[in-house]
Length: 347
Image (cartoon, rainbow, N blue to C red; front, side, top):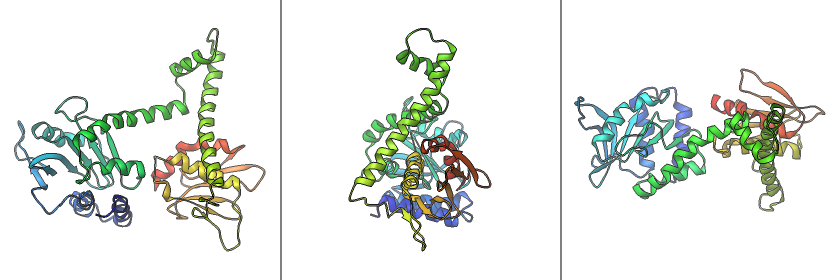
C-alpha cells in the first residue's frame, strides 16, 4: 500500500493544481475523497465495504442520504459527509451526520470539503455526535504527528477502542492550544494573579500586576527562544546534520548565509511546527535579504530577514505588500507568530 504521507502529498498537489476545477461536491468526492479512502486501504469499489449514498431513515426524515458509510463486518463504523472544496465547514453541516449517527452503529463521523477532514465521535454523550471534532486533518498542512493520528483510521490498523482512548486527549489538546496561545500573547487577569501568587509576596497592587503581566509575556518568549536555540545548537553541532545544506539555497554569487539568518529561519520553522508541514519551508538567501519561502516558491514568501545591516528588519507578508518591521533582537521574531501564521493561511 502507498505510504499515507505520499497519498496526502499527492492529493495536496492535486488540490493546489486543479482546485479551480474541483468546484462541486461530486468533483470533491471523485477527485479527492475516494482516493483518500483508497489511501487508507478501503476498497471504494466494494459496496459491502464503502457504501455511497447511504440511507438510514430517521424519525421525521425519510430517504435522506449521507455521502458514504464505511462498513466493517456488515456494521456501519464511519459515516462521511462531503461538501464542496471551498465550503467553510461549520456546525450547521453536521445535521445529517448527527441524525444518522443516532440510528446506526457508527462510532465515528467525518465531515470534509476535501481539504479539511473533521473527525467526530460521541465522547460527551453516548450515541449523540459531539459538536466539536476530536481530530482535524488538513490536507494542505499536514505533519508527521497528524499523519500518525490519521493512520489509526486505516483499514489495516483500525481499532475502535484505541482510537477512542486517544480521542479524548486529542479533543482537549485541540481546545487547550488556542487558550494557551491567547494567554501567551495576552495573559488574562486571572492568569496574571495566579502567576503573581507564585512569584510575589505581599499585596498585589496594580503596578505589580502590570509588571508580572509584562514579565509573563517575556517569559513565554524566552521559553520559545530557548527551545529554538537548543534545536539550532543541536543542528549545528550534529555531524549528521552538517551545515543545513538541504534547507539553504545558495545562488551563483556564493552569497553567504549567516548564523543569524539560519537561526531566524529555524525560529520561523519552529513557530510553524504543528501549523504546517515544516518540510515545505525553505530558506533562500539574496544580497539584500534572506527569504523564508513556502514550497521553495518566490511567490509564496513567509518572511524576509533583513539582517545585513545595523538595524535589523523583519519583512512580513500578511498584507498585500511586504511590511518591514524593525527589530532589535532575534527574540522579537517570536512576537510576530500570528502574522506569519496568517501569511501561511493566504497560500
